[in-house]
Picture 1 (cartoon, one colour):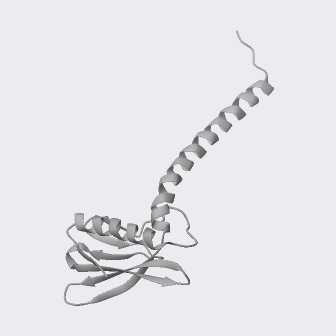
Picture 2 (cartoon, helix red, strand yellow):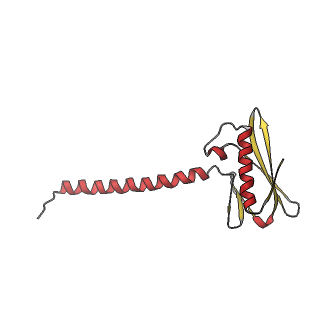
Picture 3 (cartoon, rainbow, N blue to C red):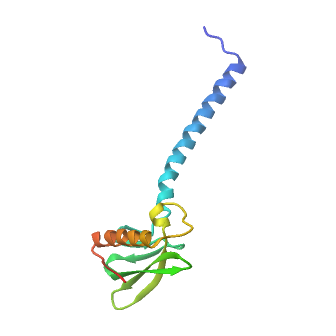
Length: 137
């Protein structure tokens, strides 16, 4: 019969606990990688709702949206995108701002005109796939 001392038993238990902690940490890290990229999205569309992800998320039912108007602004050489949702019945939604973070998927200190144009085209494509009319000013 194999004899294991108390010290060896404790060492085995500590190694097993350490292995479990490493596995759990790896799982959490991989989940956070996918969440980090979504953190910079301008909006998401789920369950027939458009959720604008700007600070406090704002939800619009797709059936209530008449059109989404995109434009861009410039301040001190830094460009920014603007998105405004027009609801059916002529109601205007507030203006939502976005920058190159949506394109780079990380924090952006400044945005170029080309990046804002690229992001705007991509956002318009996503909205049109769900039957939402979009215009760019």
